Image 1 (spheres, rainbow, N blue to C red):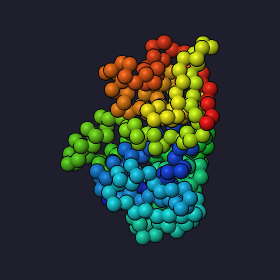
Image 2 (cartoon, rainbow, N blue to C red; image 1 turned 60 degrees about the vertical axis):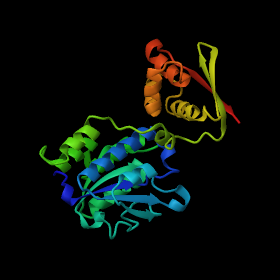
Image 3 (cartoon, rainbow, N blue to C red; image 1 turned 180 degrees about the vertical axis):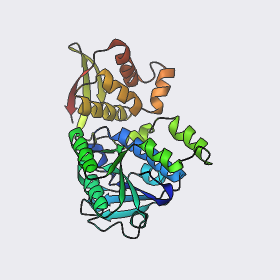
Image 4 (cartoon, one colour; image 1 turned 135 degrees about the horizontal axis):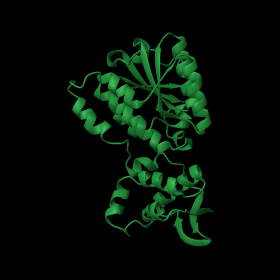
Length: 287
């Protein structure tokens, strides 16, 4: 079966302020979801945002809420959106197809897609726009959903099936803004997805047994500390692979650093790993 824009709803599950920083590679995931919301808006697909206990976990990230065109926002305490009965009165109730993205893949997302499928909906789970704290949990969620008859798709599958024909008026806009540009966030948007660093005084970077640099939790360096701390959490050290993700996290500042070597020394260090190899060992400095 194909996704049809005039019969689809995009359901974005629980992408909230206090949940996002715990998710593996959260900024890239958020960028992918923003891309998908932009694709839905271009094709007239309505968006529903669910929020798990927003009083305690916060609301949907503003950058996603602002990207959607007049989204329906629903709250719940049960993990499944269906069990919560919170989709009543939204396009997800009246339309027969539901495209799902969000977090966590193996909890709220999985329970929602399984119960949507049991309710007779045609359900599409966007594999590159769901996430969990643990990658194994995400993989298990995808396998279980597929076994239950949920269609596993990607963002580009959704976009091309919603458009269906290259002659649609917005094809050129979609090609320029989505297909020719990888999902991206500004530096400030990326920071909003990273773990908090309130407990850190700084971070030491070591190479070959020598202390090379200290990044401190103070104005002018706190953003870099957040980036390096997130890389350390996900990779265990600042390796070349971590450095490539770090350059992406820095967003527009990375481009400025390429043009002006020496202006952004913490970004320059990530560039150097691409050439020199090796990596930095990390020692965290508590407050």
